[in-house]
Structures are given as structure tokens and as C-alpha cells.
Image 1 (cartoon, rainbow, N blue to C red):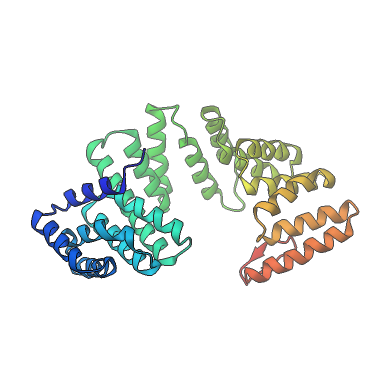
Image 2 (spheres, rainbow, N blue to C red):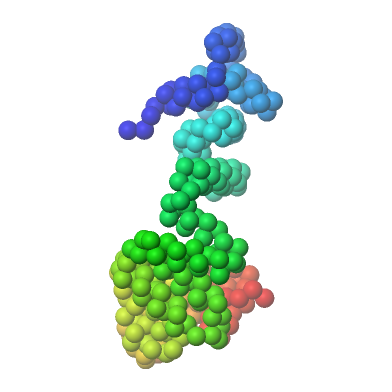
Length: 321
């Protein structure tokens, strides 16, 4: 059961060493000031770094604030204090509450980005400090190198992990991605394919590895093989929207337009703003004799492209102009 609001505030108050004097000060003010005035004062205190004095004001008054803007100010101020003292649980609890009250708010998303980034860095530092020789620490370093484009160094670390821990899921997948990056648009993908197949031997439920094997088959116009992989990917992850598009396109590549329609229809339901899905579905409708539906999908494609401020290739995919 999630801790009560009071318990969470008390935990945070302890983290910032709230003094008895500050608590008594807050109580005396609350006797003569309205909850709104107390929260406003708390916000001002936080702006000058006085979390210990501000927190009791929020504790006793935030729940009584009906005005959304002021309540948000108080909640955001509490998040700032929690982040400052490293109380991640309180900070995330408040941010999730703020998200529910103001979904999509850019300020909340901005603060949340910084919070989770800070949490990730703290966890990474703790992992390196406490378990520097663990394969998890090695993997974290390898992933960092890979993100920097230092593929050779990353691959060496990944292979070192596999040597000691051959059954760790995800390592062959990373090596496959590196091989694909090294192959570029025209190089051989045989090495990458072997890595993704090795990944499935370790982790048969890796839908991403299955999907990439399907893409490699589709590049070679091996439609039946591609259909097999993409179908498997949709079964492993029913929300894997790209797999439905690729499945529909592969079935269309085989000339099986009627069979392609359900996959493409599912894709446009999942991704209604992607012009590519509407285009591919329009082709499938047209090739199965439903011209009215085809025209409707072409109109939806044009609308989606306009919303995304993109132009379309002949395949219906959006590209930046």
C-alpha cells in the first residue's frame, strides 16, 4: 500500500532536518493566515532555499487549496525540495499526481525529465561504486560507449560480458545493432543476422530482435520469411505498431493484399498520424476492389502529412521537406 501523504511529508521533513522551531513557526502562522497565504509563503521560502520552513506549510495547507494554479505551485515547490535532498519517492509521487491533474503540461514534463535523468545518473554512480566488476556495470559502460558511436570499444565490452555470462539477455542484440551500423546501407548484414538469431536463442521473447530479422528478410524480398518474423513479433508484443505495418507491407509484397488489410487496418488504428499506414492501406483496398475505402485512406494520408508538416514519398512515408 502506498504511504499516506502525511507519512511521505514526514519522511521528507526528516531528510531536510526540519527543526521543531520551524514546525511551531508554521503552526503559529496557520492560526492567523489562510491556507492560500500559507502556501504562497511556502513557495517564497522554497525560492530562497528554505525547504525546512516551507515543508510544514505545504503539509498542513496544500490539501485545502482548491485553486489549481496555486496548488500546482505548492506541489512543484515540494518536488524541488524533494529533488534537492534526494528523496526520489516523494518527488515522483508528487510528479505523478501533477501529471494526473495537468496531463501534458510542459513545465511538469520538463521537471520530470530532469528528475528521472538525475535518478538515472545517481543509480549509475551507485552501481559503479558498489559493483564495479559486475557485468551490469560493464554493460552500462558499453551502452554509454555505443551511444557515443564508439562501437569497437562497446563491442569489445559486450563480448567480454558474453564470455563470462553467455546467457545474459540483450547482449547479442546490442552486438547486432553495432553490426548493422557498421554495415550501413550497402554492406553485408550477415554478421548482424547471426547476432539477432543468437539473441533469440537466449531470449526467444525479444520482439525487437524478431522484428529486425523480419526487416533483414524484407530487404532481400524474402517475403514469406519476413511475414513469419513480423507475425511472430506481433504475437510477442501486441502493441508493437511497426510490426503490423511491416507485416502488411510484406504480405502486399507477396501479392496477398486481402491478407494484408487486417494488419494495416490495425496499424492505422495504432498510429493514425502516420501517412505511410494510410498509403499502404489505400493500396491494399484498391488492389482488392474497394475504391471508396482506398480514396478515403488517401485523404487521411494527405491530412496526416499536413499535420506533420511533411511531404510524402511515393511509398507514402513522411520525410522532412
